[in-house]
Image (cartoon, rainbow, N blue to C red; front, side):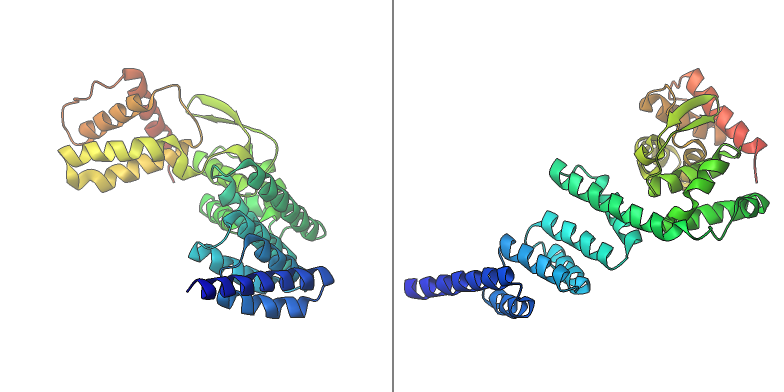
Length: 313
């Protein structure tokens, strides 16, 4: 048994020496054939996979690189950071810059190591620059006049569409029209779009008496907004205790407020906002208030509801 293990180990070492020799010689065909045989005997080393990726890029076979790296990541094999960096490079080589922006955007929201983050930021910036270059010569299909002529429903639908596609062509348009719209829900949609394309610069927002200056590229997602992440689940837990049949309506109420107020952070504690929502829902159901909510917070919720009613569709 020991002899078989030793012999197998020597075979692996020989394959790895051959791979290095073919790689250094620039013999892509022989390298790829040898790599295929090598992986039949052993899980590839990190160095071998790096040479594979460099070879596939050099041979202008980025599609194969993407397929291989995705399979390795899905299987949990090899070094995730290496797979991801080379996959993004391959997608960029294929001209799939929107995919690079989407993948990198998700990664940058995670607590990833600093070196990995620097690599991802570099690939993202390169993809953004290439995409901007492609779009420089062409005017956006929708002009400012076109946008201004849309009704609110059409504007919201348009902004949602370009957010989903990370369409950089409309960054300047949305930055320009942002300050002109007085509709909170449309401002929210615009901010989420500008966040998706990592727009630079700052914007000043005022919603229901709370003013703040934000950098769109540094905003959290709507799902991470405190009303959605911290307040909503706790309030629904309370509503389930005193009226389970009202949880859907309560969810719609709170999500509507979140969309209307994002990304404003009022000067209240999360617990205070939870109590205010719970009492507001009790009042809606004709029940006596029982949470000891602060008057100032309840007044803020009332102001939001009044503002929404004034600007109702």
